[in-house]
Image (tube, rainbow, N blue to C red; front, side, top):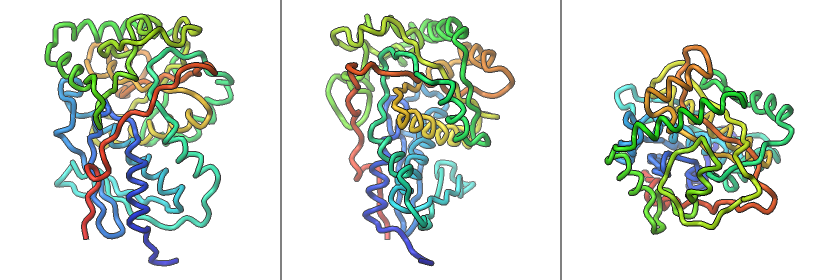
Length: 327
């Protein structure tokens, strides 16, 4: 099979699946170019929510997640992704170029991981505690590329400090009209191809039961998941060794891995980035994880009760908007 290349339609299907990756405010700040047997990933600065993500760091993390999702999608289709990160030193918006080599055998695990892309949701409601965490945590850690990011599992005793950091972030932004206007814009009441739909927002009563969360505009829902009277999730943090664009991209790849591992284990997840957007709250998180690493984001992991509401799939931009085919 020397010289074999993936079919263009297969690559397009993989890109469409990969674009189910989470992104800051569901902004989807990526653009793919298919050129012959290669896929190239580009960062789209004009899609960055600048009041939230001043430096664009969270948007690059989002692009790392879509890059790893592509790796997963192509593996399920029988192709190994060979990724060159930042192949053009004169264009740092060119995040990656991906070549492909055939895989000898596609396992059930490859397929299950790709299926998890479609099942994963960002769930902002309270979680019940994850069962069998002592067995799941080492299995999760074994899948993390520690050259890209460090995974921290924060003790339950840290929750009051995390909650205080969350409140501090909101307090410092209380009068930031630019920030609040941007949140309103990304949570428009009508369904579009990007942004956070109203169906995934929480009501004021539901918000009170999740003490570590971004304060999005309140949704108008009846009280959901009442049997979980307060959030009992495990709180994970991802940090990097420095704060470069390369670090952010790698963190996004690890984020994708963690979310898909949790989804395959039947666990619910919610990614949180608001605590790392302002230095005051980021410093609290840095002290909690110890060392001098740069905290990038938090992840809540828990269980949705059997009869609990699972959020609907959020919208995505059409494939024609995110994939350009050349040659």
